[in-house]
Amino acid sequence: MPPKIRFGRPEIGHFEPYAPGRGIEQVRKQYGLKRVIKLASNENAWGTSPRVAPAVQRAAQRAFRYPDGASTELREALARRHKVSPKQVIVGAGSDEIIELLGKAFLRPSDEIVVSAHAFIRYRMAGELMGCRVRTVPMKYLRHDLEAMARCVTRSTKLVFIANPNNPTGTYNTLSEVRKFLSRLPAETLSVWDEAYFEYARKERDYGCILENHLASSRAMVLRTFSKAYGLAGLRVGYGVAPSWVVDILDRVRPPFNVSVVAQAAALAALEDTGHIRRSVEKNLEGRNALCHELEKMGLVFVPSCANFLLINIAPLSGREVFERLLSQGVIARAVEEYGLPHHLRVTVGTPEENRLFIKALKKVIP
Image 1 (cartoon, rainbow, N blue to C red):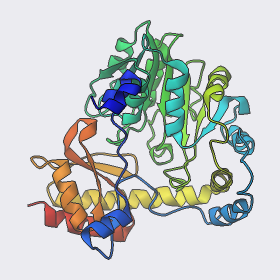
Image 2: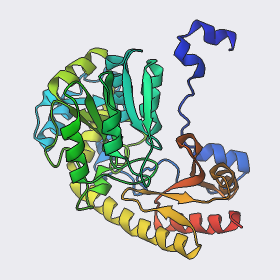
Image 3: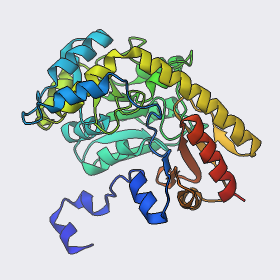
Image 4: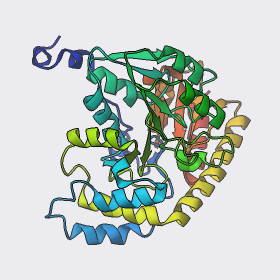
């Protein structure tokens, strides 16, 4: 173990940092390219609401002041949207921060969390950071096996993390599955439902959304984000809706002033523009269908998705190999070997032009 690591907590020695998608300018310089498209991080290819830029400009004039540490106005707006008390809402620098806060606030080495294989990696990282046991349950047809996850819950299980829809598979669990799972969960275990891609998935009639179906309870917390459909990935705003006692505990460990003045203003403006969300979802569906059609023509297998990305099986090639080849063509996709999917590639649904360039590049790099 490197000498510097010895001064840290033992858990840090084997802790791998999260690997974000490659940046456009980085790839442009590395390969000497004039044009690079990024389809790696599931951002909204259609950008932000036109209401956001003016709100950001106004907020920037207050940049010399600390932000409202509790994000009060945004909390209240979100509470009105979801018909809950502001005491049930917490705002973070992306939902990533709230996931980490859950670990810091609730987990000890003697505790356990339950996660699914191939689920968003940040859940496992939250448990590993705190040195607790992470019980990983295999997926069933690349979907969360909620029955198996419920069976894995023990007296030591503090948290169960469920991404619905899931990243990187794009799959979802149905309302009946969600209800059955909640009925089996012990009172002392908190389930955390990450609905980062809710806006896209809600078109599925049987999608098991917690908030929309009024399933939130003393045993359920829901995470949402402004980074996907709302197009604010660069400003880092996420939120959680939970029982007030959960929010109270998280607020005790939440860093002060964690969401900037500009980010709070942008989120408020984006939240009001429901038309932009509707149009973004419709364009995503058109683009996703077009991508599926082209992939089928190429004979490639992909996972049916309800989100704004597709998981493509490119076996026998490795995802990392195809990822590197695409970079040379000016396309940034995402290899997902860290999710236990070494022969898959995840690609975000882009604009029609971006989708066309991706398919053109993919045909060049796959024999």
